[in-house]
Amino acid sequence: MIGASNPQQDKTGTTGAVILAAGAGSRLGHRPKCLLQLDGIALIHRQIKAISTLELTEIVVVLGHHGHLISPALLNQPVTTVHQLEDQHHQSDSVRLGVSKLSPHVKNVLVCPSDLPLLNSKDYQAVLDVFRARGPSIHFVGPEVGGVPGHPVIFDSQVIHQITSGDQTFGSGAWRTANHAHSSRWQTANDHFIRDIDSEDDRIQFELETQRKLQWAADVS
Image 1 (spheres, rainbow, N blue to C red):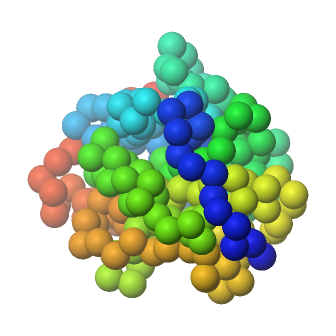
Image 2: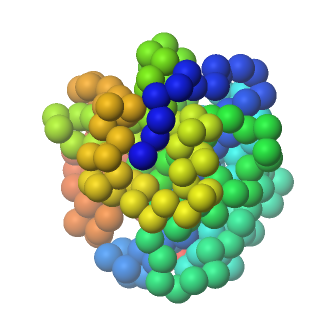
């Protein structure tokens, strides 16, 4: 459980980002979600571009099941990659792997899955601003839309220590319950934070509601 001491202040060069792209995409025909293209641009490229505007110290992308397909798309991108070698893993395992790849001087970590097509630089900046304005006992901040937890989330060095020390509950209801007093769920009506794509039905519904093309590239269709 997180202690109540003052968090490390967010300073230039102390915040890194982890993008999670290790999933199997089993409900999407076992294809990598991050290579879905919104208006012709892969979701992973959209996220990297948006996060890059925040001037964070570094970005780590966690790959896994479809690493052989995603890696070529990351050539010449301003990211470091790390590969999840276990076929059976939880999101917390990928978070731990990504956090461990960040430089030791990173004191705060922004984490986001790679299947939220509407996230943009303003959305990321809004979460970062809420985090920077947090009280001294708050170590974890994430958006919440209509009672639904969203992404990205951001946390400080105390949570980093929990994760790298092997806390298996991070990201679960048990973790949130145990650390409720030190976590902040930022209430917002912005559905960009919860609009993910888990299935083909989600993709089709997204296109119908937004009138925007969300389709597979020819080499992953």
